[in-house]
Length: 112
Length: 111
Image 1 (spheres, rainbow over the protein chains, first blue to last red):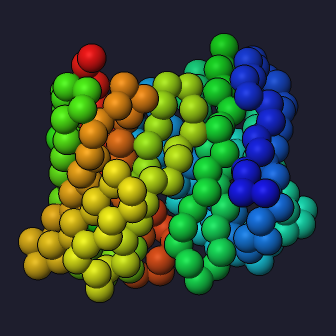
Image 2 (cartoon, rainbow over the protein chains, first blue to last red):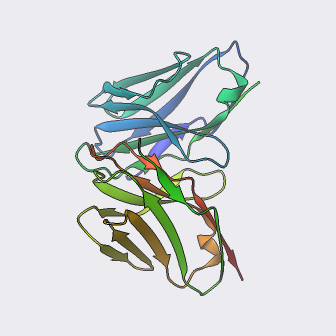
C-alpha cells in the first residue's frame, strides 16, 4: 500500500463552523505533513510531524490545529476560518531519513 | 531564504521531447524532486535525484542536475497527451524532507 488517503475530498464550511480534515497512511512512514495550495500556486508547507510530535509549524494561524493521534493518522482541525483560507489542503508522508514525500489527493476546502 | 523558479508554460507536440527547467538557490539541498499534478488532484512524485548525482534516467524521464549552476531539468521523451499537467520541481533543504516548491510549469501536449 503506497497510498496516502485524505477525507473528505470536498468540504464547504461557514466561518463559524468547526470541521476536521483526516489523513491516513499505512506505509510505516514516521513523518507526516500538511500543505496548503491555492489555485495556480505551488503547495506551501504548514506543519510537519516527526514520530507523532510537531516538529515544524510554519507560523500558521491558530484557527488551524493539527493533531497526530498515532503514526498512521494526521488530522487538521479547523475553526473560525476565513474565506481566504479556501484552498486545496494536501497531506503527505515520508520516511524520516529519506525525503521522498508521498501526497494524498487533497481536500478542496471552501469557506463561505 | 530558499527560492525555486520555473518557467510558467511549455507547449509541445505529441511524440516530441519536453524539457522543463528549474533553478534553485539553496546549495545545501539534499534531494531535488519533480512532481506532476493533474487538475483537481494531489501531487504525484515522478522522480528525484540525490544532490551528489548529475543524471538519473527512469524510463521516459531523464533528470539532469548542474549543481554548480543550481540548475535542474526534466526531459520527457516521446511526450504523450497524458503528460499534460503542471510539473513542480522542489528542493529538500539540508534537512532532507522540508520541501520548497517552484511555481510550477504547465505543460500542454498537442496532438
